[in-house]
Length: 93
Length: 384
Image (cartoon, rainbow over all chains, first blue to last red; front, side):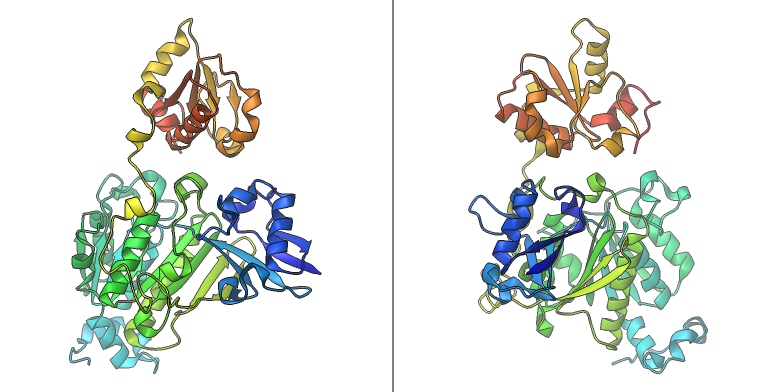
């Protein structure tokens, strides 16, 4: 099942500059693992030392936060869009 | 509500508002009675201050302790070439007074802290967060929640922006519902490191101004519980759902954070001087002398290639961007005296830490980076 994952600007440098990556995965956890397999440097930006998603990185399936779905076991349908939305702090400088 | 009246002068000035039934006389009177506190008078604060003053928001507060720098003018449109070197609050206040002398502007030349935040926010109806760092984001959030005030949020990076309205008293989430914890320092680049398209804060700041005006006049559908994402390169807006987290430590059903905390500590920020000993530091003058001597050190630049295109220190031996350093240690020699530099000395400080951990000892961080090299040693090197 092909799913498109959007990479935010702040993390694109760790994903060979890609704005989107398409992968086959049945659920969110498998999708993220597949992404990190392709782009290993992304790993430390998405996951903490405990292997859990970092708390300043949110993942959305469509327009819904996976924390309010089934977390990393949230199933994915063909053609779904998954977004990684990290905290950004720019504005003043 | 709205026991204030509008003068003939105000009726002339705001006529394009007044002829819309959604705003009308009552909406304009609400704006006149309304007050907004802008935290930060920079990229986001500039369009915010201009449009809120133009719209006739009766009282605008500006919090900033910074002075206007030439490099601000690419996006901070409330300031001007003539105000470079002056306080941002004073610079903005003068511009706002010219734009609309009928609104009151109060300036606070201070940094918002846990000690003064509640006092600063209390007199205002709407709080707007236009800052560039995580400690202030969490502080502004927590103080707004505790005072029951809406916090109009905006954030930008390079070509991307986010905006929403945090208002738990209206059933919406707060910033901590979205991001319970800040990223550790260094993992997320700031605009000073990553750059920003000058017009981007114009788009996000005007979204924030729109929301503030809607909140004050009570019209339309506020951006509560929705995160607006903007991608300038793709020219695409997207909207994500935000939910209030019942377990949120600040706005949840049983809050555990009920007074303001130490936000630097919360964000893992420790004073720079304690992290790197002075034996690992070198000033630009010292480096210049060494480069002339027989003990010329190996000069490592940890900036990105597109920064190297702007300016370099002559005699640089190698460029390895700090993010690639861990994987490219084999290109460096532990036996050679090495000086590491970047733009301002922050990234090279991180690089020196990493190299220390990897067993390098003959190391020095160039204090103040290429910026201080330009001001102290060689002014022909451009500052950026």
